[in-house]
Length: 111
Length: 114
Image (spheres, each protein chain N blue to C red):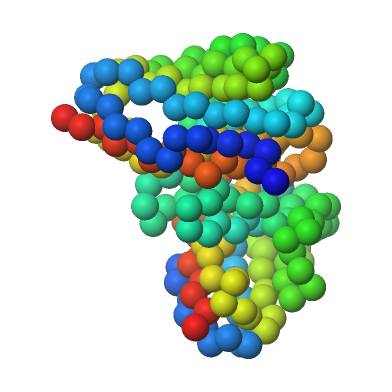
């Protein structure tokens, strides 16, 4: 039972444009959400997070939006750069210590 | 701070053999996690340690799997009687305060069972 879903396996965006990665979740007990970025042959790297009491968190070019009523979050990257090309994972935490990850979205930023 | 270190990076083993992986977390991190990632999937939680205490285990962690963190520093994950379905990337992560930031992952150990 996939509690965190990333329905777009891949996304291609031109350099300089906005990349929007989406994530849906089913468990209303999740209270903390994170985005990780992963390059091949490396472990995931923490990117940005948001608590369920907020609806937006911004860090440089990266902004995460949370819509609790829709159980939806999104990651915006503006402007997109070729170095942003990677797999992006959405993750959520409930009452325990485990993170529940989506299957990832592969982002390709083309020059 | 050299990050989270995992050893070995790759392991090929025959079905039925036992394997052991090691994880060295960031030195001041008291929390340590093991995850497993298969092709096309996100990481799946296996187990969590706070210091030397194993506080949470996933139902994915069958009785063939055992994890230890004897002195609250490095951790080992052992798989006994490996099966082809155990082939995956095994990721270790560590953190100080899980609710305030994401944790730091190692590069993983890729296990191939033939």
